[in-house]
Every structure is written in C-alpha cells, then in structure tokens.
Amino acid sequence: MTDLYSEHHALALDAADPLPTLRDEFLLPRHGGAEQAYFCGNSLGLQPRGARAHVEEVLDKWAHEAVEGHFTGQAQWMPYHQLVREPLARLVGAQPSEVVAMNSLTANLHLMMVSFYRPTRERPAILIEAGAFPSDRHAVASQIGFHGFDPATDLIELEPDLPGGTYSMAAIEAAIAEHGQRLALVLWPGIQYRSGQAFDLRAIARLAQAQGAVCGFDLAHAVGNIELALHDSGVDFAVWCHYKYLNAGPGAVAGCFVHERHARSERPRFAGWWGHEAATRFRMGPQFVPTPGAEGWQLSNPPILGLAPLRASLDLFDRVGMPALRAKSLRLTGYLEALIRGRLSETLQIATPDDPAQRGCQLSLRVVGGRERGRALFDHLAANGVLGDWREPDVIRISPAPLYNTHADVLRFAQTVERWATA
Ligand SMILES: *Cc1c(COP(=O)(O)O)cnc(C)c1O
Image (cartoon, rainbow, N blue to C red; front, top):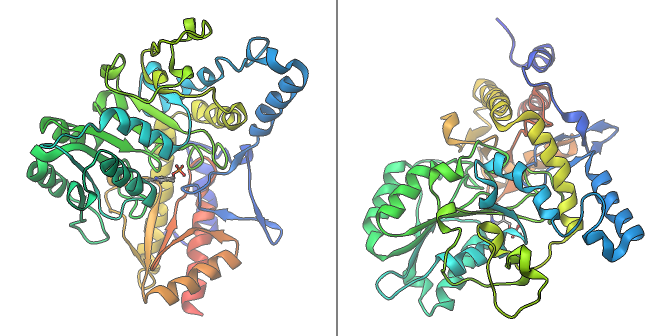
C-alpha cells in the first residue's frame, strides 16, 4: 500500500499532477533558509513575480509622461481598469460589463447597499449569517441604522444548524421563508471565512428573490478559489477583495459585480465622475449620466498603483483557467483531509464540510483540547516554517492555494503536527 505520509509519495503526487505548480511564478517567504509552507492565501496571497514589472511600468510612465500618461502609450491610465475587466469577468463567470475593479471591499459593499438595500416599514430586514466577518456586520448594521431602522430587530443573523458551525440548505431555506415578507436583502458569503463552507449562490439567490428580496454576496473567500457563474446564478450584486486568493497585494483595489438586469438601474446611487459615461465625462457637465453596467458605480479615478499587481495575477489565472485550478485544489485539499483523518484526528477536527462541493481550498481545523493547546500547536507550526492562520478560540485555518502550494507543503504541515502531537 502507498504510504500517504511518505515524502516520496507527496513528491510523486506533485510530479504526476496534471497541473504543474506555478510556484516559480511567486515569491515565497523564507524561514530558516528554506521556503515557508505558506497556507495563508486566504488572508494575503503571495506576490506574483510579474507584479513588480507592472508597478514599475506605472512609475516609469509617471516619470516620463506625467499627466500625458492618462492618454498616451501602453497601459494608459484613463482606461486602465479595463485591462482587468475581461480577465475578471472570466474568473467570476460574468459578462465584462457586469464587473468592475474599484475601491475596497467594504466600500463596495456600502455602495451596493446604497442601491440595493432599500428598506421600507414593511420590509426593513437584512439576513446574514451569524458570526459574519465583522466588517460585513458593521456595514449592514450601520446601513440599517442609516435608514432609521434598528439592527436589534432588523438585522437577522442566522445561527448555524450543523456541527462545525456550518449550515444545511434546509436551514437557509427555512429562514428565508420565515422572514420572507420582512426581508429587503439577503447578504450571504460565497465561502464563510471561519468555517470554510461554500454555498450554492444560485439556490440562495432564487430563494431570496422569490420572497421579493434582493440577494447579494460577499465573495472575499470565494473568488479565485472556486468556480463562479455570477451571471447565470442571477445574484443581484457581489463584492470581493483582490488581496486574498487573487494575490494582488495588501489593500489591493477590490472587485464588484452588478447583474446585467440592473445595468441601467434607476435605483439611487452614490455617484462620482468616474461612473459617468466615459464618452462625455470630460465635458465636465453638471448632469450625472451613468455608464451602463457595473462601471457606472465607480466614484473616483482608480489608484493605478493599487491595480497594477492585479494584472500579473490575472495573467496566471488566465493561463491556467479556473476549472483546472479548482481540480488541482480538490486534489490538494483532499490530500490534506486524508492526512488529517488518517493519523491526526486526535489532534485536529475538521469543521469544514466533508463534501468537496461545499468547500474551497481551506480546511478549518479545531484543535482538540482547547485554546491553550491550539495556540501551542499554532506557534509550533510557525516556528517550523508552516504558516496557517489562527481564529479564536481554537481554530487553525489551512488553505492550500493551488497556484503555489504543493502536496509536499501539505505533507510538511501534517508531519509537523504529528511530530508535535507525539513528542
Ligand atoms: C477579508 C474580508 C473583508 C475585508 O474587508 P476590506 O474592506 O477589504 O478591509 C471583509 N469581509 C470579508 C468576508 C472578508 O473575508
């Protein structure tokens, strides 16, 4: 029988993998002379080697062309955001006019809610998952308050019904049915950041919309991780950031999707000159005429330096394609799961669903024995060059990113845990 835990086996899996690793396209942090086993792509993706050239291109253009850089030569700044539009549309399964790179995630969530959360006395409520990412919770609670409603009654936080803090589709369906007449908006994660559970966007959107609510998604942990079909799923809007699995660097410009059916929406919006139709923007008239589609929600001319690294990363996603990347992700995370179930289950309990269709690359691992033991294990991993991330009170998240993580990395994690547990 093959020994799952042998280095020979892990290296053979890497050598035989149908998608050879693109690790050489990234800069890996080092630890004690060796490359780190970096499993934090869910927090900050690694730097693509190509990022520097795109940033330097902007700096050089600025140095040599100054204001003319907006309109002359390669990669002009005026239409710069369009350089990423089509690759982003491919990545999330949207039409190019449905996506835009702008602002940051939480800012985009607010802008989307300005248009798509329109509470009335009869229908004031927002449904989110309990334990949502704090920024999302702050955003929805503050929007509810901004409209003169009360988060105590109008923010509905659905508790998980399954062990590991995960949800059955039946529970989501029941909650949407129960609160249906009061729901203005259902805001759900594509992948929940703490549990790693992936959701069926289309099913949730249909349930919400059947009740007369709008349905939006936060895809911070889903984009670049699982295959998305935003257009076909029918979701009204979605927002995400680009510094996690998209590897565009700290604080990178974020992403936003607005479904085609809202392309010429007359809903209220917070407007800015960059959302005005491009053909007449520079007539500098007083009247706001929105660009049809997602670009009509732009406010400002974009931070070009914050967009530049994203081009390098999207080149890699385009080279591989999400289907092949996701297939590799299933192999890597499947291997991680097998190693844990085989010999580490007295140390680590997997909180993420077993069903690969209900997760991305991340496994959330509850350390048996509680917080103190968990911290000790986490520190031991870090001291040995294995970097996951820690979530209170007792969870280590390990996210093998298929662009740069390997089976050998995954084995190194398991070996480091096992040596600690048996010491
Ligand atoms: C990472 C993340 C954020 C971060 O928000 P920023 O506006 O980019 O700082 C917000 N929500 C979720 C769900 C996240 O995973």
